[in-house]
Image (cartoon, rainbow, N blue to C red):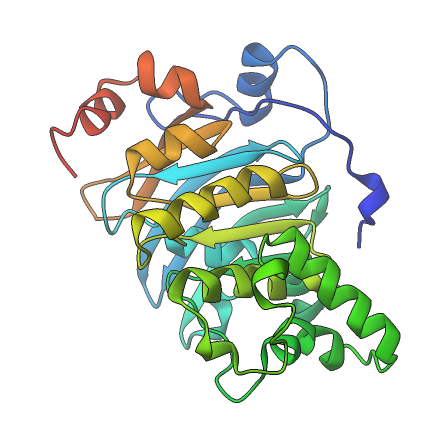
Length: 292
């Protein structure tokens, strides 16, 4: 699997569009002339629940150390695509995935790739905060390290503090690390879950509507945190909040559904372009609130 050192900072992404069949690579090169390596690359990815195709032919590229927002109406496959990216989709009975899902050029669904290892490299923060209820704040953060065999007390303590600091919650919990994680407020619990995710040193952090259950103040803190984390991680966030997408993301991908209710990528571009001058009328209609 790729190492952290293989990622280099770059900006910009683009993709092939369903309405005009251009290759993902050509579209990327046309919109962003700087040649760069991508953290994530999807080539004609499709996701199924049994025989139902939930995601159809998605091709896109995501630059390292950037924030990409997935937007679109409910049911268009955004969350399913996140689950494909860290191999959680396959944990549900009867599901399957087609196409290529590349992390630094390595196919995450290749025969030699360990799914558990893939999920460590591509971490997930869920819609509702889910700290482990029987664990303390400290134990929540280091749970992934313990599963990975780390036993050194000094290492565990160091990683816990570093992760909590990166998640902007250390000052709030440093004097109560051994209290239950569930004793925290909703916003604090979500930042605790972010700390738990980054403790295992992923390359990618996926966030599935991480602020939907939070109040406005807690939402603002998480949004600020997302921008800070993008210095070290590649972040993909699903959101139904257009203002949030415009505030936190560098790039936005808009998804919709076809006649068979399969989700597909309509267009993807710099967030400023998507929100001010999208290429597709369907995107413009969604941004303007005419549907969705």
